[in-house]
Image 1: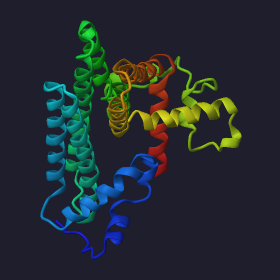
Image 2 (image 1 turned 180 degrees about the vertical axis):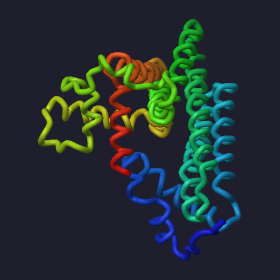
Image 3 (image 1 turned 120 degrees about the horizontal axis):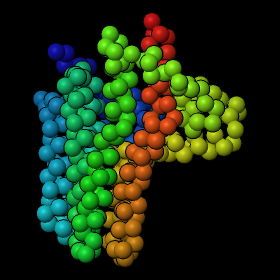
Length: 296
């Protein structure tokens, strides 16, 4: 396995391990985390620590922080837990940076990275809700129930299942269950009034060619893509903590938190109705198939 390039200067290191296109995926919060994570990665790069070890460390720190917040719902513990969750996210950035620097990128590392997100985010939602629920004992069960549903929604179950079905339609055509022709006979692939069309045409149609209404929807969808991310959730929780330290009434803070829970659930409901009523499976299949043909 290659040990990667022997970097002598930090600027050379940072420009290689954090390609600018990464900002397209996370154009906002990356600008705040990456200056710290790159310096942490620069220090770890000079050691024998592997990217996968950093990911394991991230998982341990993240889950431990959530466990402490849930078991000891006190303000000082909450502050400490949030600090450690931010440390875990810095490690989440660093593992990929170290992997690129040492030429140690692997499918196992990619799996561990996704696995870390999948178990940490539901844990954060439940831990934070347990912290706030102590102030509303009479509604504790209801709060934790909504939080549990929201935590499941952080897995993006609709999109994951959609991706799985589309993949099976493409790779398992020999099975009658995945014979697309029997499903698509009565389906309309084109629908000019479909909000989903904005997503499908996002990079194909110039802003001047679409209506103002669709432009507004496009901006809202782009905002949603950034808002419903693990780092955005952590940022939101941190803002709530700051408000609490500034003396904002806990009821007001909880209303903001409850709004986030409902928003995450609503996002999945929206995706569900796109699948059931807007032919999303067929459209996603069409899009993937077209990309495959272009690549060949």
